[in-house]
Length: 264
Image 1: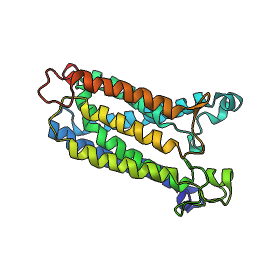
Image 2: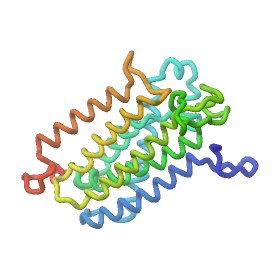
Image 3: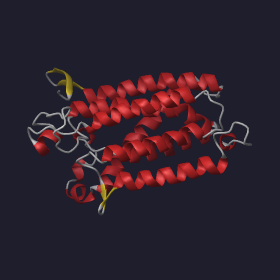
Image 4: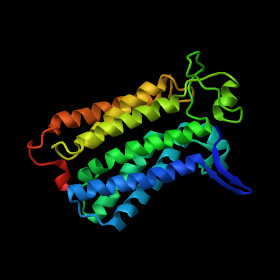
């Protein structure tokens, strides 16, 4: 495996960038299907502007989150803060950045936030699956050494190879890719089930939090909060808050009253 798909002199196309582009295009198409099905007042131009804003806000949020957890290094190397091509994007920070940007966008365009969030949920998790394939080609988001038959030896120039050398490690990024895709299939099947606005998006958050917590048990380079893995702490908070919201408002019921999404 190699991080670059095409190299023509100074011209390089990296798998990671290609996966971002693929996620953007495929996710935009899926979102368009759901916008039309739900009858949301969003034009094609507005849909792509929304996606562009959320994508860049997600990248910025993911980077700032990662930098904050590694401030000791970045405070001594401020020139590396913007160097996202060197790696270092945290998914939870990306979700926060994207959600804030999405909230701002829907307020400006007078669209129900939870209705659009539900429409976007399947596209988001599928985009995350594409991103993990980019991580695989980079040899990053890797796991601990393993003697299991599916352990992978990554190139010596990759983050996994630099940390463990010619030792097979858990392909943690592929674990998450497979689970992400399974979540996408489930959400895509549930999207037509009658439910209140917010149910599908909050369910996505819960399922991904469980997914991320599981994969973190195999990952060799997680962000830490003291002795605890940050993804475990953040995922626990997400599960508690999202689960409480679903139960409190009975979001799985289509006839449970006024939807939170109706208020924008």
